[in-house]
Length: 181
Image 1: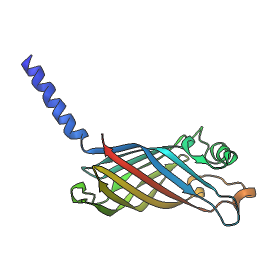
Image 2: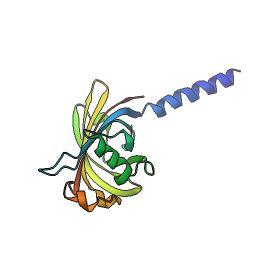
Image 3: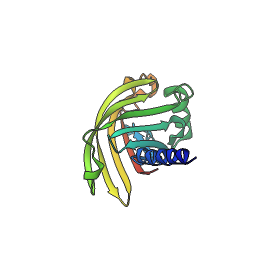
Image 4: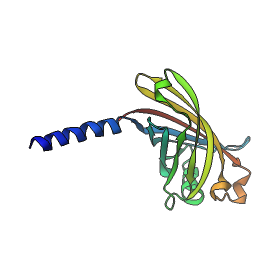
C-alpha cells in the first residue's frame, strides 16, 4: 500500500513537472486580409484559435477551425467556406513548428524570435519562416506574428470573375495570450 502511494506521488510530481512546461490558449486571434483598393474589404477574423508552446524546447503549435472565421459580409463568409477553402472537406488550418533559440528564462519583458515550421491550409502543407514578438507580463506570454501567403500555393482556386477583387497576397496576423495550464 505504501509503495503504491509513493509511486502515485512520484507520478503526480513528474507529471506536474512535464506539464508545467507548457503554455496554451483556446482564445487566440487570427486575422487575414486579402483586400485590394477600390473594392469591398476581404477580411476575416477568428477568436477561437488554440495554441500550445512547449517552454522547454520552443515547439509551437496553432490550430484554427476554418468555420470560426467571421466576415463583415455573410455572403462572403459563405463563399469562403463553400467555394474557396472548402471547410467541410478541410475543416482546420494548422501550424506546427519551433521558435528558434527560445529560452523563456531569458524573456524578462519582451523579445523577438525567428519562427519556422509547417503551415497547413486546404490540405496543403508549406514551410514558412517569420518573426514572432513576445512579451511576458504577469505570468502570461503575449505573442504577435504576421506573414503573407498566396491562395494559389494552397490550391485555393479564385474564380476569374472575382480574381481582380482579391489580393494575391493574403496577410495573416496572429495574436495569442498564452498561460500556464
